[in-house]
Image (cartoon, rainbow, N blue to C red; front, side, top):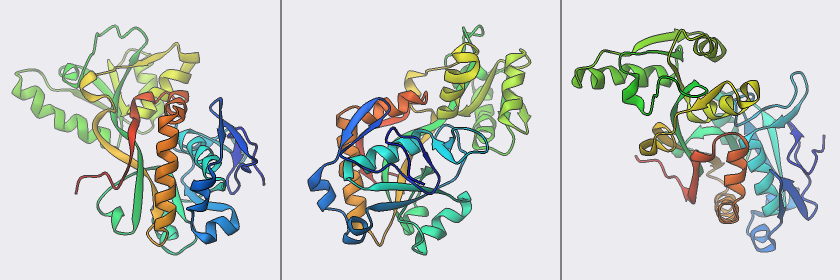
Length: 297
């Protein structure tokens, strides 16, 4: 299925780069020099085969339940990169734990799925890092508890989804609370994020700890943006314990990695990356420099 040129598409297809593509309201044209730098096989096929795990809000999700068309931060960024490079970024849904092996086997050229750039993954993939994100604090609109930073959660009831990294962040915060002579965080775990949001809506908890991009998307979309807001801590712009997320590219395609890195920098310089991130309530996670393998070993 061929996808539309406005950044909306189906898993397994991508927007044809017919000179100009519109993503997040911006017109993006191809760069002949960048196109020429692509591996011969990619130029010949006109396609970068991208694996992604659907849904993972707000990075990639179905536009309508039961239909294949995709949307999301990663999806839009893929369409923008494809437009700049003059090729298709064809997204195909894969289970997350099978994505890296699928790239290793040659089934895909790259992965775009909010994947954290880690030392272990860099053994088999090269990462072009486009965001830095961690955990964020979601509160009801107006922030009646006046929560401004992670330390303000001491002594308060805080919701989070069970078996997530955010639960570990809250557990680690307990020693900080104790060291400051304050009461511990009263951690309330829920099986689903929607359950945690309901507890926050009903006033059963003072805040929810969730991924920073997830918090931003919820604040932007729930009740038309009238239900929640994100606590913006200047000391943790991308979120608490933020780590780089990247486009993972097969190590067998170093020229593709280089071309994507240069195309991403062009999208940073012209404001496209910022516009895409802002569209999904995640403006704070965008990087200012397109780096390769930015994770600290």
